[in-house]
Image (cartoon, rainbow, N blue to C red; front, top):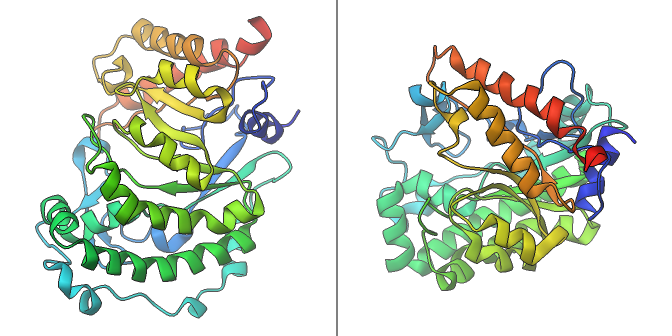
Amino acid sequence: MTPKENYLTVLKGGIPEWLPIDTYTFYPPWFTPGIICIRPYIFNIGRMGGTDFFGVKFIPTESTGGQGMPDHSQILLKDIHDWPEVIKLPDINDFDFEEMARKDLERIDRTQTAVELGTHVGYFQLLMEFMGMTEGLIAMYEEPEEVYNLMEYLADWLDEFFKRSIDAYKPDVFAITDDIASSQSTFMSKQVYRELIKPFHIRMCEHANQLGIPVDMHCCGHCEDFIEEWFDFHVIMWNCCQWMNDLEGIKKKYGSRLILNRCNNLDDPQNFSDAKEEDVRACIRKYIDTFAPGGGYIFGAYVFGPTGDETVAKRNMWMMDEYKKYGIPWYKEH
């Protein structure tokens, strides 16, 4: 069985030969990934520092080793009513999708590694990036019609962009992203989600759904109450599901209907520079023992840290080494 076949076995509800690993993990030289995530280049522009495709300015953050965050000292959209003058999208025909796919895929052996096409843009996240969290949330509650109009404008372009991308890349998995929750709860009620965000999640997944391509939902935070909503656009995998949700209860309830990807926690020892090796390894074994039984689990482990923190690489190495020793043979030994 190839790494690709092993990974896709889990997505089809089966038991893999070995525990597969998620697409965001830092792969060591000895490991051939079962899947790799590719995002069209335009959605990476400026997001590590600079101005992105939509005109939002990002600044690298020291605590995450340079990962970008919106610079909300320079708000792009100050008044939701001004979006027609502020938010501008290019002609979709200016993009050569076949050439983009050729360049992105030319070094990937698709007999060994599956391809996940990642959107890296979410409708809620975009509104927050355009307006900032405070004004963005206020707009959703005070001016829902205008927010919907903006979302519809974005969707008319993004739907076509990803339809053409899917046809060109021919991915094995389609991944959408929208962090609609904090560590405590979702940023909105189900009603607001159903009215302002979900219709556009459905639209974004429509082409993948028609082609039978599995959908992966990226949503951090305490968002378990929205799982049933995701099934309406055929989500079969959730990343990165975190322990502020009842993950054990979710696994018991949904089984292989919902693949749990990573299952980590902000308080995990590997997230801290003073972590002890034995604690990190024990944490990895705990996750595997909890979620691997019966399949439906994709392992994932990585940490970011402040620029110059020499322990980051060491902590990542401990996790991957424990995965190699304990995780890869798990299904053969249990």
